[in-house]
Image 1 (cartoon, helix red, strand yellow):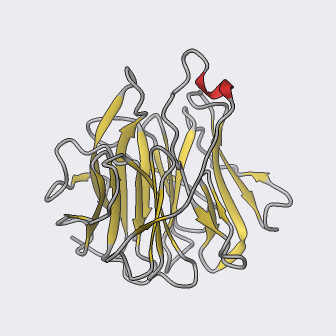
Image 2 (cartoon, one colour):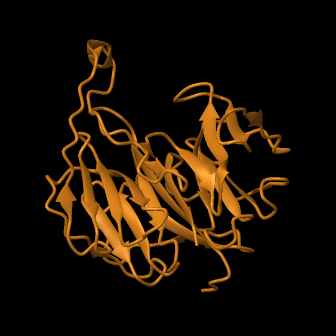
Image 3 (spheres, helix red, strand yellow):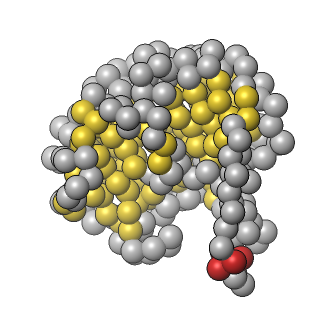
Amino acid sequence: MTTDGLIYLGLAGETAPGRTVHCGLFRMADGSNEWEPLQRGLPEAPAVRDLVVHPHKPEILYAGTQAGPYRSADRGEHWEKVDVPDHGLPVWSFLFHPHDPEVMFIGYENCEIYRSDDAGERWTRLPVSVRFPEITTAPGANPAKRVLKMDASASEPELIYCRDIREVPGTPRKLWVAAGAGFQSEVGVLLRSSDGGDSWTRVEMGIKPAHTMFVLAFDEHRPERMSCATNGGEVYSSFDGGATWTAHQPPPGGTQIYALARG
């Protein structure tokens, strides 16, 4: 397996009763067009809702599953369960502190957030208290509430934002957002800001994604290498900072891509 550049992709779905859930964790090397399944040490049929590569050690990778967080120290070849005193709920998001990767956060279903100050050896639950308006429990709504995404400003690292918004590594005022016409739509969009979010431009990819753009990922050491994916199975990569894009083969086994990482 080449280590020149890797894309990691996780399939999942919503956790409410009756919702479709796809399963699997896959890896593809840059220059290849074949997805390799990753399984050793993961729970059976993993629903992977977030992936993150260590910013200084690309061989270390975390995956958020329905059975909690898992860690790999060899680029996904083998996995082990991360020992967090949680309530056995699905993991939806990870975050490394932008100035100190020894500090990590994990976001769970039921809006629990855990913090580690020693590279994931010990974890403490943060005093997060969340209340929702009654409209979120309207008929047909997903009653499960979760920390979907977390991000932090490199210039103001104590500010944590939910949603899938990504800073370009090393350039904190350059932001990218994955979007669409709705949770399930026929339009996938990337938005870009060069001024910290004061103004936004729609990215012309030269390709028209057929589903809502769901996730973004940058290579921390080579930020011109980036990938994105929709919740309809489309995966794209750019090797020139988003100027041009290449489409990949969809992952085997499902289309609901909830997690993406580069390393």
